[in-house]
Amino acid sequence: MIAKLHDRLVKKEISCKELTQEYIAAAQRDNAELNAYVTLTPETALETAEKVDEKIAAGKEISLLEGIPMTLKDNISTDGIRTTCCSKILEDYTPIYDATVWKILKSQNSVLLGKTNMDEFAMGSSCETSYFGGAKNPHDTGYVAGGSSGGVASAVGGNIAVYGLGSDTGGSIRQPASFCGIVGMKPTYGAVSRFGLIAYASSLDQIGPITTNVEDAAIVYDAISEYDSMDSTSQGRQGAPTRDTLGNDIRGMKIGIAREYLEGIRDDVRAAMEEAIEVYKSLGAQIVYFDLPSLKYALPVYYIIACAEASSNLGRYDGIRYGYKADNYRDVNDMIKKTRSTGFGEEVKRRILLGTYVLSSGYYDAYYKKAQNLRGTIVQSFRNAFEVCDVILAPTVPMTAFENGHAVSDPVETYLTDICTVPVNICGLPGISVPCGSDSKGMPIGMQLIGNSFCEAKILNAAWQYENAAGKFKAAVFGVKL
Image (cartoon, rainbow, N blue to C red; front, side):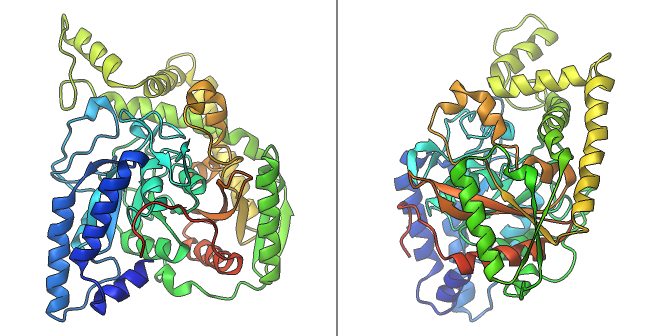
């Protein structure tokens, strides 16, 4: 879609202002039902659109992302634009600097339509822990959009943004992309700068694109994967732009299937995986089955490490430095206690308490240290797997989107939606979710392709090949009709 819109802008079939106005109108109309955006920025968007139109009128060349309407998850800092993490504690917080990814896109005149909904501090798998209420699934608003980047997925899936950036700590880009029938990519840890991303778990967090197709994911990834001296873990993209590799022959490519990934998934999801395997066989790929026994440790390892890091990262929200502060208190300690008790939602408090517990004296060795040791085991298991295959094919989520409110009534099942996605974050690997079918109710099913470190080009090409061979799946009915 990005390349087609770029072509229309360059050929002056539509002005950037007209295009932007269409998306603003669609967002203002449909957001009441989707709840994808928590902050709309029409003035900012139109100012940028006018700059792009001036460049085109002057005969200047524009980049692929220039003038394309997009959105950012509300934990990515935007100078002068409210950034809340969808938490009461940051309800009125306005950053004074830009995240590196937004700085890059802003320099290319990307048109920011607004900031999108998310689970509070990215802690959740349904978007329903948001202080502003959850984003809805554009395929059926009775179902969740997924989380934590549910707002971006709802906006892109509902076509009230061309693309968006989300963050993925344990599947928070790929899971909502799967639920909403679109593409979500989590890059290698360090490929995209985390500077300006409000942290959940620093050793797991990664920013990545959510788009309607694989080519768009490659375009956005290529743009944002720059080395950044402001992020000590940054390495940038390794190799040539990934878009240039789309369409490379995959005959002979070894696609690995870990048997453990197929255990405990719903029958319709398994059937979709089997159909995808047949598509790859028809493209000449070689299917390799193998065992990955350490996979069973991934979920407990993830929750111990993520919550431990969250308990440290969220210590800065004390009512003193910035953000919400309780009104009535006796002393400083009472103020901090009341600020955090009333400023954080239940899920965030639950994870902070769990993280503090596993780091506490007497429990550190039993939980946190053991989880870190097991993390090393999981990392080595994936290294061994990539000695026998080029990419790994797996379900993105064991099921399709669940109904609104289900996460509250059955939180354990909600945690289990991360079971297929968290290994990628534990190991710092790249993964991409692409639509591969739908269930009996028409809700999308997603599959993910996992690559070795900095092998984004390989998984993007494999995803692109599948997308072109399998054809288009059911689209949502919201948004701009182009």
